[in-house]
Length: 213
Image (tube, rainbow, N blue to C red; front, side, top):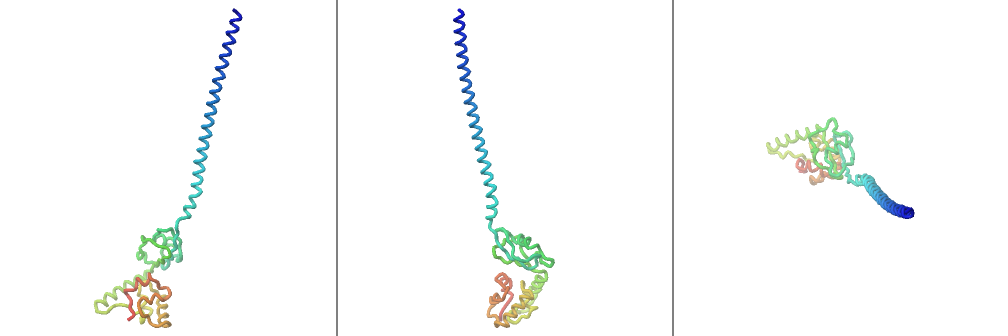
């Protein structure tokens, strides 16, 4: 009887040991799975972080790749000269880059909402220039009513008369007179663009106000 009890106790102990070994294996497997999942999550987090860092690194490069244009701002502004702007900028941006209006600027003459282009010359006239233009408009109106053409002959006009043209100040008027004295009279109105400082933009403003006859 005692022997049977001993054998029975040994069998129970053996079975209990096997069961405990099996549970330990399952526990180790669960731990291994958990560690694998943690490593996978950590790798994913590192990948996201690296991607975000790469995005932040290349962001300034993309900003630097934005197209810039150069515009020459002159006339009645505080800091005339060439300014750099983003493509698609407007006259208001160019004015701000040039330090804003000068004290004698005709602030409502230039359309500040207009877009500017690379290489453009943007001229802000003075109040007295605009006033001379208005006086000239009245003179041309009176001349048309009296039968006169009202046009300014660039081959004979003096400095005061030439200065009534929009965009023509004393310096440019002197250049016009100097040119016709050294090179002869203008053969056509377009020839005035041969004078230093008078380009297409200025000519377009005065082309219907001048004559060579």
